[in-house]
Length: 335
Image 1 (cartoon, rainbow, N blue to C red):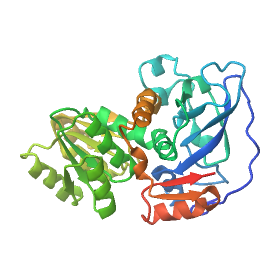
Image 2: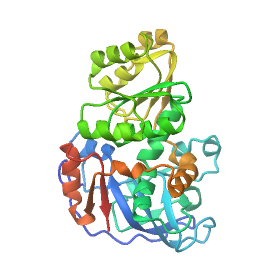
Image 3: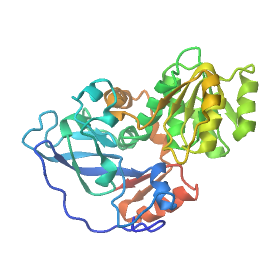
């Protein structure tokens, strides 16, 4: 990204092993994330040409001398944060906040090859050779599925619970899938887009609410006997979406917030008297990856359905444009 709205496919130096804990992979598929649209739209600053992307799957081509859990030729998927998976924070299940974390977005995964720091703690080996459909789903696991899963987990989705989902992008849609897998009894998708409503129902939504803001909150209350949902997923990151999530939650309920926060300020007194639990942030995708890979390879879930446009890497600029204009929910880039 050279500037807001200016995406170019440029030649970059081949990545090499820089540290003995590194691996270099040949990326077989990458994708564009909703969070990539913040700088594309000029909300986040772009001051120089910046490598893009933080989601990836691929085949290991080289490993450093200290790498032991992956080998050359392995098909792997990793999180959007590299982590050692051994520090005290990682062992507590928060690998995205690893004391040695490296944001993969700083390296740019929308590329033919990628250096993965802390390979042992970051990469998960996929058993066997995945089909094209499984590749698509494994790519989703690298961020949006893992993030949706964390959101549902943070919101304490489970049997007997009503879950409301604010945001109908890929993360919100996969939060619905996760809540369904966790046994939620009722799942309310807040969406105004017919194609996304259809996929939401396929993933497990039982109700659709098209209203937003205070009207959306009122509708959630109406559907829940005036109480609000037990569990609410916030998957946007704006002031309106966060307040909509908080106000849609019943006292004692849980909000799992994973939308990248932009100018969100919480009213302390309202939060105090709401009696709700707030938990979220950058998803510790590495915590869930082994389970998610297993579910995908067994055919129990098909999160790759969120990809509704596939383009070659050379056409990445069109992919950004399509997502910006809401002509696509999520774009997969192939090599």
